[in-house]
Length: 229
Image 1 (cartoon, rainbow, N blue to C red):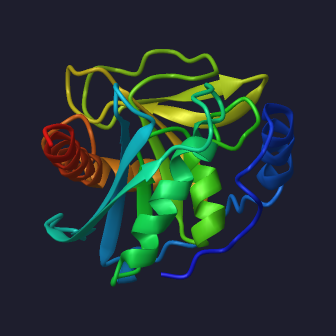
Image 2: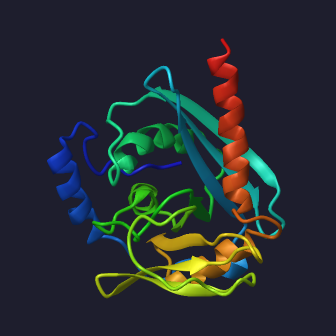
């Protein structure tokens, strides 16, 4: 896969935060996903070693709409950026770039386990990765980073607006009846209505999208293998 080199990864905290504000202006908030030609959706995951500075990165590509795993790639890298809330993309994306460069299939859509526009500087991991890969991306997080919202109804498919400083930055989506909702926001080249619809389509049985679940399994297996050595 082609990767756009947008900037250096050797940045100070201040420069990284300023860069997020600059890159946020380049996010495309209109939909560029053709549902009729959507064939492959990808999920990402990054986990960290407790004993070292090692990052375990994985991408699972699933067929759509049947959601079967068709391709997976992993990478193990040393983190070069510290763990700083709000700046996780600078820690996680370098390893994910290695994985995406190795993929033989270019996914039509990526669902990131994290935030997109629902970020203090409007550039969460899904937005940053989407810009670098120039692929439609969605942020689907397990918890809220910013904003306020009403709790959606308990039935699957119910949703409420996630608002931050008067701006709608995402939706709180009930992906399974009676289970805690997920937080969906756009990453790049997609609109929020389409993002919520596609996340729901990727959650046929469980709270999290099958893309995320597959990537979690992949990275857990990779980390267990390396940590036991």
